[in-house]
Length: 146
Image (cartoon, rainbow, N blue to C red; front, side):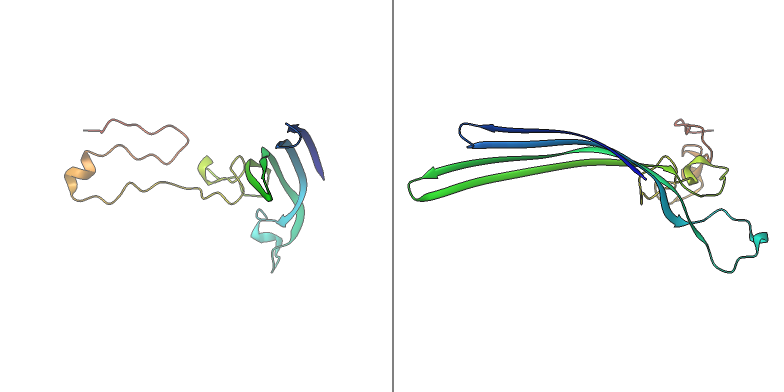
């Protein structure tokens, strides 16, 4: 099921020399057909079933600007357009992960998630002087531990 809200604006100025169109949208989709990812192995299924368990929220805008000019027999037209869209997973069948960064809910569709590698340690002093590495939902400690 999809619920869409749109607000559009069309403008034409100077006998259609300048034309602009803007469209703002907000869409919520539920019941997206996807793989069930959180079924215990004791269920005994050989293949992964699918069901309508997903949900995504999207919002953004589209815009178009056009300029027309006639010079003698020559017709000139310049156009530009822009699109900005952001989405977020609102419902997904995933296991209850211990660490929040492992979940897909709350992130964008197809967003890469995980830890960011800052590089490799060169020696023991580099390890000792680096920030403490945490793998939980608490913010990282910036100052090095001694």
